[in-house]
Length: 388
Image (cartoon, rainbow, N blue to C red; front, side, top):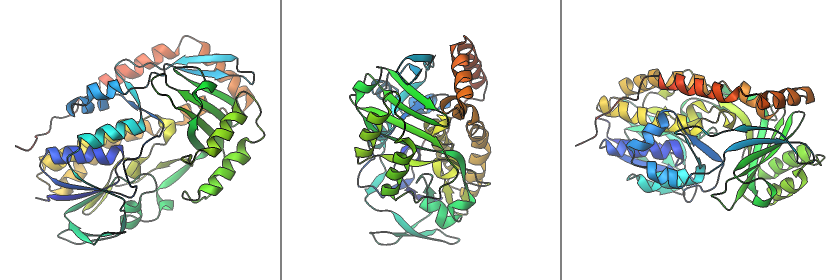
């Protein structure tokens, strides 16, 4: 039995996988380059089968207690007048800030957590994987799971360069802390000009609001670690936008040391495993923030991967194959993001007016109900056996 497992990355996918693997009796180490669990981030949705996963982790009460209370997506014109609004309440689903969910998962996990150290080398053979760390000594593990995000080091080392798997989706996005007084309580407020969106996410349950920016652009081939250039790109894209609250939001975002900027991109791979090394979460299948499904895919994927390893008694070839077969359908579904992008960032003024007209029609509620009905008809999650 492959007993000793290293997980690279301590965000939602990595921590959830660690939780389930330790429940099944595996010896799990989580290595994270950041010095502590990452706080902050945007709102994420726990929906679909992820609700059942959270229940089986005994986290339902904690997740609901930490939930955001955003109930509507509101579109405004340059003067701040509402032009359309879409309710975003979903029965049973919970929206929670990413950092809050990470904190809950970290507290729930009994794995060995090593913060402040990343991976710089992987060498696998028939019996295991030798892992070279950035700071600590090299160690041997039976299996390695890369849960280290869209810019995954594990994926680069074990599968090849990002250019083989990361697909640019024609936009860039950023979010940062913002003054909660700039937006309407319990709402996401968005202002559009052709190919651009500036918005504010304000949960009444949180003192800190979030500013959002998206703009259309071909692939800029930027270094995701070059924060100075990222700030220049955001400033250049929005410095001439004077409508609504854009200048204030831009100033606030550029002053935030934790400003997050990246391409709206997806990870598309034919296989999520290579020998004794597997990927999970955004490292394997990033659907992009426009999908609204990152947390759902991570939680369900973690549950399935750990469960398949347990049911196969750690035989990784069988487990990895079964995991991919079970999870790929949901990933393919959630990677269909074009309608969401058109909703948030219409390409033209005509597109914006069409969006607003459709948003005012009483059809979105029934469409959402149909989608939820389709989800209930999918197969329920399997029950895996916990270690005695």
